[in-house]
Image (cartoon, rainbow over the protein chains, first blue to last red):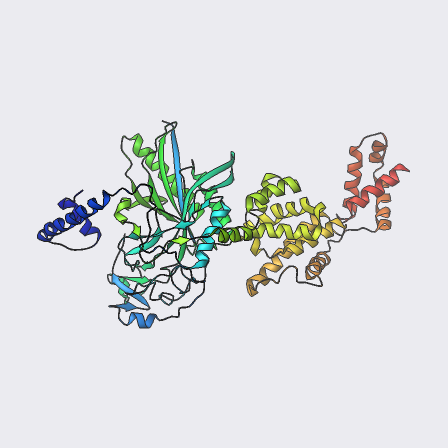
Length: 95
Length: 509
């Protein structure tokens, strides 16, 4: 499997990464090398093997349902570009 | 052409935990912006999610209540998309291995019982909220090209419940949504508050020629937060799709929003393909293992479920399907009913059911509240039935007592709005005093004094010789006329049972 140039541009768009035409071509080559590596791995017969969901073969530990956090919004918002009445401000988004 | 509607529903039920699904921030509704958004919720670098046990238990409780399989191992995945109210750039959800798989929900519809199969239910976090308008504040940045982001809701635990495309009309879809809504509240996993967004439905709607086995192209109508909107939106959407197809057009797969003011759906954005979300297992979260012991523990704590209760009311109590349905609409309804039955005993079952499904249900509907908020308590209603049974008042007068109690208590509740003390806590019965005081005040007490009634009846017989003769000639109807006259003579306060007995006794002489 290999990626076409339009596919590279689409992935870049989905990931919100701005790339130039030249960069797209360079990235296409790099990504396709990665795909070659994946192809190589896919040639291994994995029938009958349960896929792992995580690199570590351990299970999730759970926390009790308790409120442990206090209000620190003023501190967090001290590094926000713009706030108003406790709201973070962003350029207008409307669907 | 004859068209068939096909509907599947996805519901986001907010789980009733006190803290978020992956952080220890509070989930309380209505807090000031961002005061309940901690470092994990706003996605500061280096933070890690830690899964809330309460959210997992609620998901399992739901799975068991709908007869689903609980996946002993489930996996959290990242669903990637960009939006300002999603600080991480992905939503933590479940994809290939959800916590709940399968199950079904049965409900009563017009044509009888309907079963809707569930595909799955998975845990996920909610996003934050975007505000686009500052009402009446021209100086606000929101009035000048900016949107405000409140991340209090970000990270709130949701259970997304997905059905198979099993519904065939808006009516069935609403019946399903109502049944699901009642169930999640019944088992205590979600408060079901639709105004606050705790229970929202997305409807997948398509149409196809009746008899066709192939599904038509579907549109997803998002965020329907009332049963009425769900019904209106589906009905509009079905008409829209049929018109489109009959005019030779095609339905485009897309996400649509319902506009309740214009009563129509409109396109929101063309639905991104599933792989656009680039789901992959979240490396920050290990697989979730749920032990058999945990599942059995949760199963043992489940209350009797609405369907089982409904069947029991019909089989053991001999109630009609309708009565049993009303009484099991919510756990509070069932508790109200069972509290009355516990006080009055089995012989009063029918009377309890009648009072709840007729007088109380009507009053509750008029007031736009739930039985749980009824100003007339189950204990008061039980005492009212006692007073009918012991002959203090007639059934007719009992309705007046009920209305008086309802109106009086309404005012008191509106002012105090304090939680009512437990129904079992009253030693001396304040409820009985309430009933007796109202009966006294309204002068509704029946005349049960045999001597007084005999005097009245003797006069009635003297004045109605014709009826007496007819009765003696074998005309049963004449007896009823005499009872009516006696009631009239007592201004409706005569105890009908006593009047009957005395009349018979005298006439037999």
